[in-house]
Length: 632
Image (cartoon, rainbow, N blue to C red; front, side):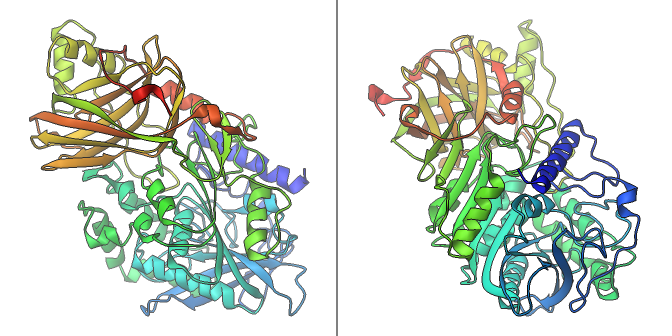
């Protein structure tokens, strides 16, 4: 293992440890999944030289510049004719000979400000962001013959303009950044994009734009449809206002005192254009999914026919950038695909936990990403035959497959009907109290002020005893806050994959929450998928989150339909009794017995998830069969 690669992994482990303990504060720390700032004051003892477009700076002149690179700064216009000026920090191989050219790895986002990523990081002097230092060092990027370019989206860092959360303005910025990177005298014209979270979103945008210069995209834990990060089918999430405030705060971060005059003026753009912050906040308040504000940001739909080679990661059980509309995006994308999918939280491919385990459980992230770029930016044949998709299911086992999802059989299962009171769980608690059962408290809501790097890793746990108590009341004929439907035990292991859908007809106004449970013979049940929606007139269909969950032989699939009682949503209960008729569950099923194993260990977060979302839910009367006819 190369020494600098080991150092990068060690730093990543420190960041993950601090994130899990809630100790991310002060100048030497950063958000979860974000490369940290300076570890101690002595590392920042000397003054750093400030680069210009024509006066490059080395690590020896400024210790914020990665070793082996030359740092320059540049400004260029966005592509929409708005007059927006974009800022770029460019890192070239220090040994690049005059007249020689290299391909470019480009990252475009809001987290590259010189003073810090999501807040001031305590740097003593200016310099390029360390956000992807783990990637630079893990791949030995400059020695391998690549440039790395970081471009500030409009309104952030050294760029002017009003921030426009993945909207037409930012899409214009991505287009301009790709074109600019491809046309520089030191560029071969081949551009690849790299990012995680927000700067993975800009990678998806880049793919959607279809520019010839963009040869490959690596997108870790993106949002696939921006609406889904703020609302769920009309129901606001707790960050409906907080995310806007978080990005407004990042946009108004003060520059470093030694930044050049042009950078400082651009960084203070919002001081003379306060309407930018108001406009940004207003967009998040639009609840209608079909409003142009959101259809312009429906990246999954906009991916139709896109062809850029795409390498993605996605945690099926992550609570931040959830796997919503992921399947639609991948279905609409027709170019080559690579993916790591599994049971982890909002992490990078190379992140490690505090005890040194890989957060995703799979070795070789930096080698595989560099091989991916070599193939598509340098036309080099891969030396290792990687699977198109490496997937970890709910058992912690990894498999290789040519696409995702692999579907052996699709089934539509009858759930029937029932009634519930849309009261946020109040009637359930009241009925439990009247029957002498322990009454679980209402679930506390998170604050909701987070950006795409800083959401809670877990929702609050479901109140202890709630599910079991509700089933008792249901068996006694009571109508409370939800009802359950159970399957026959499955006779053989079967995997639920892809995007489950529930269709139903509801009489009444209000909200509906849909949950899927994996129920073991001893009554221990794991809630493995959920979604909420405002009720709509007539027949309605709700997509749940994409999943990859294996039901062991003898286990039961339970479905809960009812009011929004758990999770993180700012629902307004109607108080009405809702009558549900003709409910159906559509599932894509796969056969675990046919898996082709590939390398990978159990991701550490899987056990955290199981502890948080396991409840007591004894199986009730079976009304449907997961595998009609018993075959896959």
